[in-house]
Image (cartoon, rainbow, N blue to C red):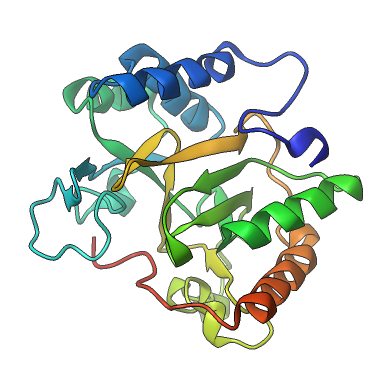
Length: 253
């Protein structure tokens, strides 16, 4: 997919945190303890890009660290109910969180600096290839592994902003469930009031969330990506005869 191939494509002069990501993944495959320094660098790179972070749950075998019986999104939700006000780009606070919970995942709160267009993984890969071939500026892109509908591609974009007139605000309940809308099949638009996991993150079943294009890429206008993403989603659903609808973020955390 042009310069989108591989998990860590980007500029020719890659930042040090990016070159260390494969090492983090390899070590995690061999050991239960992550490479804390590389993990911290990756998280701080997200914060340096202006994306606020907050601690999230993590998988314990196939269960969730929150210990909620039947947790619907194990390892995918914030730890605190106050995640929106807790989210920060403060490096010292993020380092304290990372040091205090070496296994924790992290979420980024959307709708303040950035939005995320969240599509089925196969559709996202197809759209990314098309966008890069067309010379369209694509921002950070992450892939979230998993089975079926849980396998997603996450396109990070500039936010649509917070309008002065609250009546013009499109709530995230619509954004994160637009698979019910014919014009946006399979697409979730995470904006104000929502969140997504950021790499590096671990999911149940030995799956990961990882960067395809890192946070050093500038955030594009979401409308420059929307047509390609919706076309790819429509093709994906047409090829697969629909998708199973699973719980969308957030779920009361």
